[in-house]
Image (cartoon, rainbow, N blue to C red; front, side, top):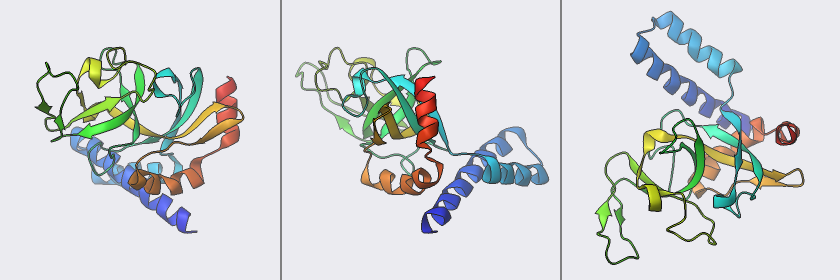
Length: 202
């Protein structure tokens, strides 16, 4: 019961935030606004399935096709994501594609390179630093902020909360302690392993 109450609270927050964003953009009348909130609250989900190859994110993800359960984030700022989270973001070089990377630093963090020739710098407002976590990939070859630089927080579309590597190898994604606590009621209600298996085989 406690999970269900917390889940509905997250769903209401997501529905309100999303509807308010659209409300201010399109000037939807109040009655329509309430209708949109109720529709999202009653029928919408706050997760979606995402398939991705995971070489850069081993061992969290397998080297071949992975099916992720991703939590949609209504707005991306430090209230919703934390350092240590596995986030889904738009590829900085191909915006129609998406990457999964570990959030390593947020705005205001000083970034210091192991290469003494590179000057330290501070991440600007609404910037973040993301990294591939595969230790076998050299930093100069990793497709992450070490090669493409800081990314905009606005490019983050969700947080990976469950990963199916194979039909018999799957489980929750390890994120920051705060985020895992926030995501646990969503996993309890919206995780459907059979649906993940079907999607993984498709």
